[in-house]
Length: 175
Image (cartoon, rainbow, N blue to C red):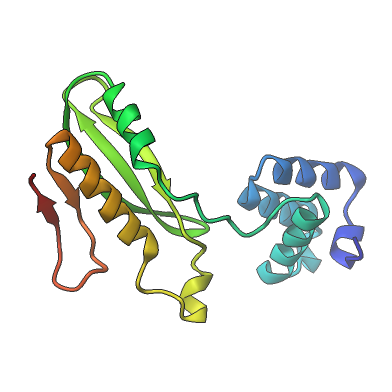
């Protein structure tokens, strides 16, 4: 790697940053790299992120997140059937992390625990906002299609509080 920032790090710090990257702890790697540099000459966040992204590439890893594979409703139905307790609802919930927004598909049961994460649906990072490819949010469309089908199969309500769809605060669909 040809980077003056990376070149100034001691070998032990390089190894520590690479270990964090190998575990996909991107933010921790950025923090470790930043803290390892002298306080008076620390580069900005963009420069440090560029170094971490380059380390990902050099280590054969992908810095950008892959979209999740399409959901398999038959496999998800098998997972739901194996859960403890009786299924009482299927929900889709927006969530986010440092990579962007995604939708969680959740099953509610009357057993313990009562909430079971069934799937995470992510169709790209929030870079899509800057290059104009969303909305519509394909993860919301997939969550609604699959969630509704599962709810109908198990004869339970489907709920999706989707603030991104005009005029919809919360949709509840009863079979």
